[in-house]
Length: 174
Image (cartoon, rainbow, N blue to C red; front, side, top):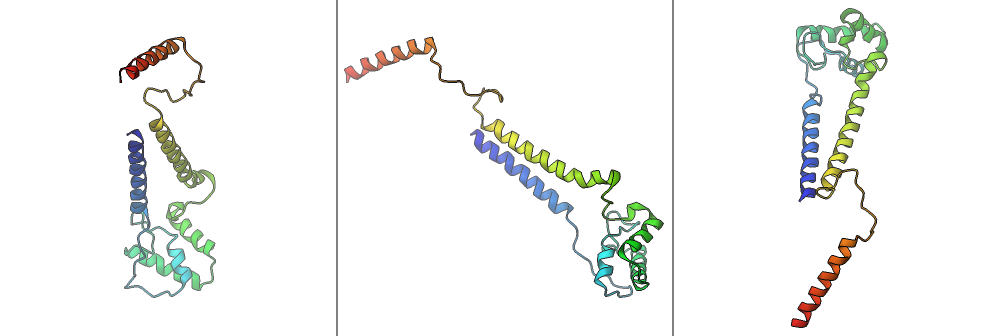
Protein backbone atom coordinates (compact mmCIF):
# COMPACT_ATOMS: atom_id res chain seq x y z
CA UNK A 1 0.00 0.00 0.00
CA UNK A 2 2.82 2.41 0.90
CA UNK A 3 4.71 1.56 -2.30
CA UNK A 4 1.66 2.45 -4.39
CA UNK A 5 1.47 5.77 -2.57
CA UNK A 6 5.17 6.39 -3.24
CA UNK A 7 4.65 5.84 -6.95
CA UNK A 8 1.73 8.28 -6.89
CA UNK A 9 3.96 10.91 -5.30
CA UNK A 10 6.73 10.28 -7.86
CA UNK A 11 4.21 10.41 -10.71
CA UNK A 12 2.74 13.66 -9.39
CA UNK A 13 6.19 15.25 -9.11
CA UNK A 14 7.09 14.18 -12.63
CA UNK A 15 3.77 15.50 -13.97
CA UNK A 16 4.29 18.85 -12.26
CA UNK A 17 7.85 19.05 -13.62
CA UNK A 18 6.67 18.27 -17.15
CA UNK A 19 3.89 20.85 -16.95
CA UNK A 20 6.35 23.48 -15.69
CA UNK A 21 8.74 22.67 -18.54
CA UNK A 22 6.00 22.91 -21.15
CA UNK A 23 4.71 26.20 -19.77
CA UNK A 24 8.15 27.80 -19.70
CA UNK A 25 9.35 26.50 -23.07
CA UNK A 26 10.03 29.08 -25.74
CA UNK A 27 7.20 30.01 -28.03
CA UNK A 28 7.50 28.95 -31.66
CA UNK A 29 9.07 31.43 -34.02
CA UNK A 30 6.64 33.94 -35.43
CA UNK A 31 6.53 35.25 -38.96
CA UNK A 32 7.24 38.94 -39.13
CA UNK A 33 5.38 41.02 -41.67
CA UNK A 34 5.46 44.74 -42.38
CA UNK A 35 9.21 45.11 -42.03
CA UNK A 36 12.22 44.96 -44.31
CA UNK A 37 13.19 41.41 -45.09
CA UNK A 38 16.59 40.39 -43.78
CA UNK A 39 17.30 36.92 -45.10
CA UNK A 40 20.33 36.32 -42.95
CA UNK A 41 20.24 33.34 -40.58
CA UNK A 42 22.68 35.34 -38.50
CA UNK A 43 20.17 38.16 -38.01
CA UNK A 44 17.53 35.67 -36.90
CA UNK A 45 19.91 34.14 -34.37
CA UNK A 46 20.91 37.57 -33.06
CA UNK A 47 17.25 38.62 -32.85
CA UNK A 48 16.63 35.61 -30.60
CA UNK A 49 19.34 36.84 -28.21
CA UNK A 50 17.95 40.35 -27.70
CA UNK A 51 14.89 41.03 -25.55
CA UNK A 52 12.27 43.57 -26.54
CA UNK A 53 12.44 46.44 -24.03
CA UNK A 54 8.68 46.99 -24.32
CA UNK A 55 7.44 43.37 -24.20
CA UNK A 56 7.67 41.20 -21.14
CA UNK A 57 9.95 38.25 -21.76
CA UNK A 58 9.80 38.28 -25.56
CA UNK A 59 12.78 38.52 -27.85
CA UNK A 60 12.74 40.96 -30.73
CA UNK A 61 12.42 37.89 -32.95
CA UNK A 62 9.07 37.02 -31.33
CA UNK A 63 7.67 40.47 -30.66
CA UNK A 64 5.47 42.47 -33.03
CA UNK A 65 5.93 45.75 -31.15
CA UNK A 66 7.13 48.68 -33.28
CA UNK A 67 10.33 49.01 -31.24
CA UNK A 68 11.13 45.33 -31.84
CA UNK A 69 10.65 45.83 -35.58
CA UNK A 70 13.03 48.80 -35.45
CA UNK A 71 15.56 46.77 -33.46
CA UNK A 72 15.38 43.88 -35.97
CA UNK A 73 16.00 46.36 -38.81
CA UNK A 74 18.94 47.80 -36.85
CA UNK A 75 20.39 44.29 -36.41
CA UNK A 76 20.25 43.85 -40.21
CA UNK A 77 21.93 47.21 -40.82
CA UNK A 78 24.67 46.46 -38.27
CA UNK A 79 25.31 43.13 -40.00
CA UNK A 80 25.54 44.96 -43.32
CA UNK A 81 28.07 47.34 -41.74
CA UNK A 82 30.27 44.33 -40.93
CA UNK A 83 30.01 44.25 -37.14
CA UNK A 84 30.61 40.97 -35.31
CA UNK A 85 27.92 39.28 -33.19
CA UNK A 86 29.57 40.49 -29.98
CA UNK A 87 29.77 44.05 -31.29
CA UNK A 88 26.09 44.00 -32.22
CA UNK A 89 25.10 42.67 -28.79
CA UNK A 90 27.36 45.28 -27.16
CA UNK A 91 25.63 47.97 -29.24
CA UNK A 92 22.23 47.03 -27.77
CA UNK A 93 23.63 46.58 -24.25
CA UNK A 94 25.13 50.08 -24.43
CA UNK A 95 21.72 51.55 -25.32
CA UNK A 96 19.31 49.42 -23.26
CA UNK A 97 21.46 47.90 -20.51
CA UNK A 98 22.42 44.32 -19.77
CA UNK A 99 18.75 43.40 -19.25
CA UNK A 100 18.27 43.47 -23.04
CA UNK A 101 20.16 40.18 -23.36
CA UNK A 102 17.95 37.08 -23.47
CA UNK A 103 20.75 35.05 -21.90
CA UNK A 104 22.49 36.66 -18.95
CA UNK A 105 26.29 36.63 -19.09
CA UNK A 106 27.92 33.54 -17.61
CA UNK A 107 30.06 35.49 -15.17
CA UNK A 108 29.78 37.36 -11.89
CA UNK A 109 26.46 37.40 -10.09
CA UNK A 110 24.66 36.25 -13.26
CA UNK A 111 26.44 32.92 -12.94
CA UNK A 112 23.98 32.02 -10.16
CA UNK A 113 21.15 32.19 -12.71
CA UNK A 114 22.91 29.48 -14.70
CA UNK A 115 23.55 27.31 -11.63
CA UNK A 116 20.10 27.51 -10.01
CA UNK A 117 18.42 25.01 -12.39
CA UNK A 118 21.08 22.37 -11.70
CA UNK A 119 20.87 22.90 -7.94
CA UNK A 120 17.06 22.75 -8.09
CA UNK A 121 17.16 19.55 -10.14
CA UNK A 122 19.59 17.97 -7.67
CA UNK A 123 17.37 18.94 -4.74
CA UNK A 124 14.30 17.62 -6.57
CA UNK A 125 15.91 14.27 -7.32
CA UNK A 126 17.16 14.07 -3.73
CA UNK A 127 13.65 14.83 -2.46
CA UNK A 128 12.10 12.11 -4.62
CA UNK A 129 14.72 9.56 -3.46
CA UNK A 130 14.12 10.57 0.16
CA UNK A 131 10.31 10.33 -0.26
CA UNK A 132 10.55 6.87 -1.79
CA UNK A 133 12.92 5.76 0.98
CA UNK A 134 10.57 7.03 3.69
CA UNK A 135 7.52 5.45 2.09
CA UNK A 136 9.22 2.08 1.58
CA UNK A 137 10.27 1.59 5.21
CA UNK A 138 8.06 -0.52 7.47
CA UNK A 139 5.48 1.31 9.55
CA UNK A 140 6.78 2.46 12.92
CA UNK A 141 10.45 2.01 12.00
CA UNK A 142 12.47 5.20 12.28
CA UNK A 143 14.33 6.26 9.14
CA UNK A 144 17.75 5.70 10.72
CA UNK A 145 16.90 2.30 12.21
CA UNK A 146 18.61 -0.74 10.76
CA UNK A 147 17.46 -4.32 11.07
CA UNK A 148 18.82 -5.80 14.28
CA UNK A 149 21.00 -8.90 14.21
CA UNK A 150 19.04 -12.03 14.93
CA UNK A 151 19.76 -12.23 18.64
CA UNK A 152 17.25 -14.48 20.40
CA UNK A 153 15.24 -12.82 23.11
CA UNK A 154 14.41 -14.83 26.24
CA UNK A 155 10.71 -13.98 26.07
CA UNK A 156 10.53 -15.08 22.44
CA UNK A 157 11.98 -18.54 23.20
CA UNK A 158 9.36 -19.16 25.91
CA UNK A 159 6.60 -17.95 23.57
CA UNK A 160 7.79 -20.19 20.72
CA UNK A 161 7.82 -23.21 23.09
CA UNK A 162 4.20 -22.44 24.03
CA UNK A 163 3.20 -22.16 20.36
CA UNK A 164 4.94 -25.47 19.57
CA UNK A 165 3.15 -27.25 22.41
CA UNK A 166 -0.21 -25.80 21.27
CA UNK A 167 0.45 -26.90 17.70
CA UNK A 168 1.34 -30.42 18.83
CA UNK A 169 -1.88 -30.56 20.84
CA UNK A 170 -3.96 -29.58 17.77
CA UNK A 171 -2.09 -31.98 15.52
CA UNK A 172 -2.92 -34.95 17.80
CA UNK A 173 -6.64 -33.97 17.80
CA UNK A 174 -6.88 -34.52 14.01
